Image (cartoon, one colour):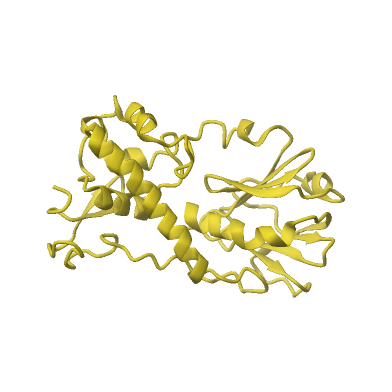
Length: 271
């Protein structure tokens, strides 16, 4: 499933092709996504200039003067830039044609993605309004996380995966961040010390930054690709390494289930 680093890499890959462009056509082949594509969406964007492409959590925000096109990739969605009107395949649901001769093609085999229109400021959309801060922003800091953890009795891994606390810390990145911070994923969130919280903030930032940087080499081409480039080859310390020796101390990595998700940790380094 695309997580924050994958979505940010997608944004960086396609944004240069949208500069100073205008939408000339929107072709909707399949409206039945996670939420149906609004019938009026093509009328909202055709003939309008694209002002820029931003990201909020795992949503891509295509900015127009009169509103925002919100795009979510769901579990299997991809966006790619086409230089020619190549024939659409079965799961190519939407094309956004630009006046520079290029088009954005949205592909989503499982149709859990979304394309929605919002006429107000993006942060007032119901899907975005209650989200926590971006993990790489100044708003995500030790004070913020300490306040968020103060009365939380859940395990720390579950708390940092809560998008109301901080966005973008998916399952892989939660395990990796906790390892880097030397914090046991089973710890009660409210019981972390100030020093541990500071280490965890730094570790989350470092883990996501490394993943985005890795995306620059593993997802290089968003132009005329088949949209199946794969995800990050992050050099994981613990995720997916059950029974293998810890890269730091040599202790076998352990696995447990938390909230129906697999958690990986080193019982020595994260003691």
